[in-house]
Length: 255
Image (spheres, rainbow, N blue to C red):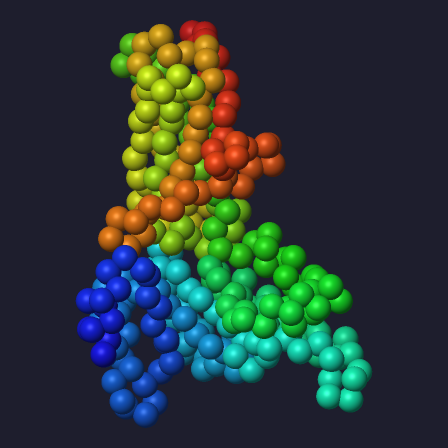
């Protein structure tokens, strides 16, 4: 069944459950086949799961995404059967579960389909959801942009920062483009870079005469079978509608 799914879904990322093979029914073999084929990882319990599973998820390769959920509390019911709202203790339990997603450096927090329950819960207890939105997954941005001489022209060096807790789930491809469309260059970082809370640098050689103008920096994430998804830079500064960032490249002055 696993091989059939891998052969059928050639472009959509698949996720494999990481439950240990306590019943000896083939979980280890399935996990090995799936991970070698580039599948993501998942677990359906962030609180009551086995320590071996948590250890494996927390120390996975940085390019390998993790989907976590709180299976026993995924409904997020706000109103009890008697009509009373849950106490703060219940809300703190669920917040604690959500914060463990950050401890694992997970990419996604699976909330299933209970949209009305989630909305009502968020209106009363927003802290956990707001914290996950700020830190979960990857949040990349151009942090430094240096300008220096190279090959009798100018080189731009960009340090890409990741403010999230997870590595990039695939290959981050970064492109530099002129406003008039005459110049475009780009390439990919190593898979997973920049890791959560880390930096990774890339450089671009400008043709002669392409200084003193505006340039646009954009990014994509390349995942399974070369599929690419646009990235919206997580900048404090305003970005363009497509998520790219435009900045001035001044005339380089020799020092």
